[in-house]
Length: 158
Ligand code: SF4
Image (cartoon, rainbow, N blue to C red; front, side):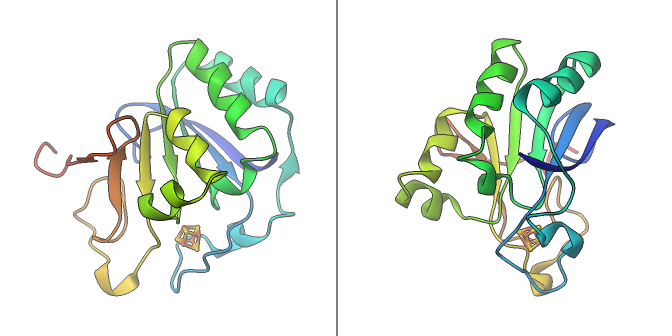
């Protein structure tokens, strides 16, 4: 898997202190993306599941997959990584530019819904940018419970 960075103790990529893993590559190319250097799928460095797990176990926090778009790694070990993290009792939030509907319609992408706890989905739309939103950049983006497929609302709690 191509990894741009791994940051421990972030509080903006989901509930609580989390280890955020930023994967390289994004094909959505949202105008005014906060992180366009993440679009290059060859950026960062190649890391195995074992190498990433060494960071996860060292920090011992819940985990967030971000990027880039982590779903580009779905054939490269992302599901195996998720399974290893969950076996430690950790929760996983996964950011993606795909919408829930696009994920559900795609046989390959759909597997992420059983592998993580929360999906933060949808392209960033600059016209809908709202700095008051929790854990996402624009109001079209939804925070979804991956098991129930229901939208979660954190904005009234923070
Ligand atoms: S999905 Fe995220 S990383 Fe990809 S272009 Fe859009 S805002 Fe940037």
